[in-house]
Amino acid sequence: MYTHYLGLDLGQVADFTALCLLEESVWIREEALRVLALDRVGWHAPGDLTPYQVDQARAWAEHYGRPADPPLAIRHLARPPLGTPYPAVVEHVAQLRGTAPLRPETTAIVVDQTGVGRAVCDQFRQAGVPIIPVTIHAGHTVSGDTREGLHVPKRELVGAAQVLLQGRRLKIAQGLPEAPTLLAEMQHFKVKIDPRTAHDSYSAWREGQHDDLVLAACLAVWFRGWYCEHLDHAARDAERRHTDASNPLPRDDAAMHRSALIHAARQRTQGVPA
Picture (cartoon, rainbow, N blue to C red):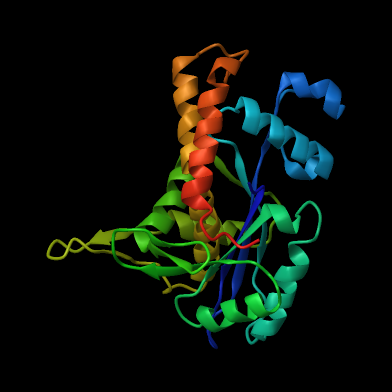
């Protein structure tokens, strides 16, 4: 399971490359407070915990469950200067995934390979950096796997980020220089449906100056939702059945929760790079 999702949009000669780092909060149960030397039940940012605390808290959550819909936050946005060589981008990402609070084993790197990305994805592999390649298309169905590459409709990518923003579940960290631009671009996306073909188009997709940031964010947000779909669904079901605020996911749902984890692992991790 991941705590961080790094979306990477690779620009061509006249386009910026953009990187977006998405962080998922960790649930701390009451039973774990003493063991982990913490004083508050609830969601915690991984950066506020030690790697040991993160691993132990996630192990408890995987065994006993956690509330649905963990908070998500965009912690880092970057746009290397135009003309930055792709090998330099690969090196930067490789360094970033090992910079605390990120760890290689808990960071998913999601790369757009639609245009020039395929060759750069090969550079990542040659550098020993595991990635999840994504090819964007105008259809309706997600296909492929995490090793050879996922094929994802544009509407899936954009919709995932817009839903989280509208529901106030996705936060953008204050102080990020590119944050106002990203938020404005996300809010101005307009979906157009062709009545003859039922295909959708996006008025801002790769037409504006900062669309690279939008795409990088959408890659990270969409993959997190897709990868954790079954786990999130199981947690929501448990919360609907048990409304006791002091115990959002009781122990009698632990077996169901573990079953969802196993199912999610089978469905989502086929071919996940080690």
